[in-house]
Image (cartoon, rainbow, N blue to C red; front, side, top):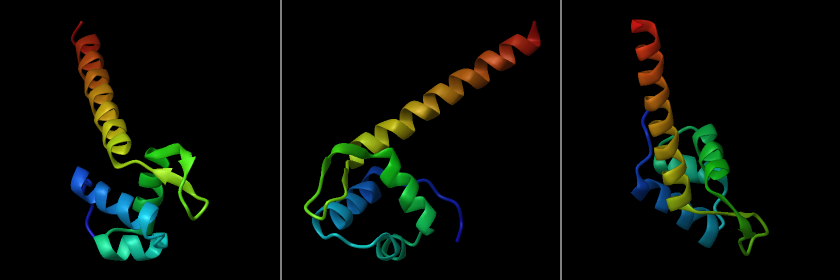
Length: 88
């Protein structure tokens, strides 16, 4: 498998399979063609305070996507600040 970032559409697919259909993580990973650990990380990123009908923390695709975007922005900002410090 190659490394690739998940799109919002793929995160919505995880949300549907996990919250509504109660699919196991291994089945979701297989469906999306990603490693199981990718799904576990996604579920952690998009975890909510609510529980689905299977008694598991609900996954929110939009929350997970925003978490990733915020992390990217923060890292990009940190990299820029670090480069500025080196040039002085």
